[in-house]
Length: 308
Image (cartoon, rainbow, N blue to C red; front, side, top):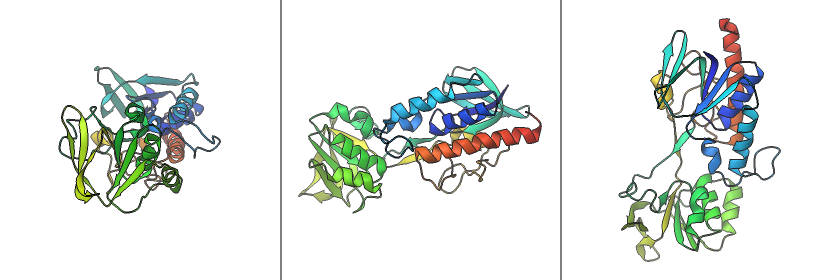
């Protein structure tokens, strides 16, 4: 039985593993998606100590650090279920195998929010994508639409503009809520056109995407012809596994945690985008901060329980 199992291979999970390893706790870190949402960041300019680094490179550094300890076991596998067992917890994987741990840190991050427009699912992978920074390269010389007004949308539009012929940045409001740095970056691009105070009501196409339909006309038409649609309208915390244990969810659908990152279930802690721990500010720095607190709290919990 491991002292702690960390569910999630992102910034919060890997940071937690660094701390639990340094506390000499036997640590399992496991997840399906290596690097989590961190690998979707094309450019990271706000990680202290690194003026400019790519998201995948930063996450690779996190992994190398966490797995450098002998007492850390790393697995890339899909966790199907969590349940309480013999004063600890049992983890069941998709292949039916199991592991046991005395404590858990839930660092499952979030999933991209879908638009819910007609034919969105039909064209997923056929012109509809949920990561502009990941997939922009495939639309070199083409016209694309980026939907959203937050950091991921505005950053995505700036990245897409480097390769696409034309980028339509479609946002339901008349101003962006993204970090001013990314707003300034996208404004430097002369091939980005702003389609504000509009909503996409339908994804158009045949075998692949051919355009989008708007709820109000833009330049005399309620349709825009594009080859790709990048949907960047936020994310939903991945709480399903924690909910199997009865962990409390707050009004914004995040795992409710205290200052020590403890959930409502004794022995279960949470960190990163899935938790309410940093005022819903989803950043590498906040995820790492929460991960370090969760690691310390697991150590304190096990000491109090006399398990370590």
